[in-house]
Image (cartoon, rainbow, N blue to C red; front, side, top):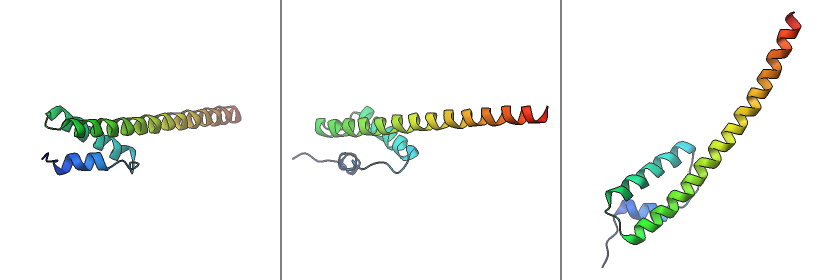
Length: 89
């Protein structure tokens, strides 16, 4: 009978949306470390890989959203600075 360690079972069972970008990144790092250790069964490795893909997609989407927000903020700031400069001259 095959034994699963608690860490690998948790990786396979935890398919919920991460609480934050930092939590997703930390979980992804743990998955990579566990897979690199080479101690996971094929089934556990596949489950961990699937979870890693989910986390990676979440992180990429979060970064993309953040970049878009920064672009919007920068555009507003540039407009505000140019208005202030014109008002002072």
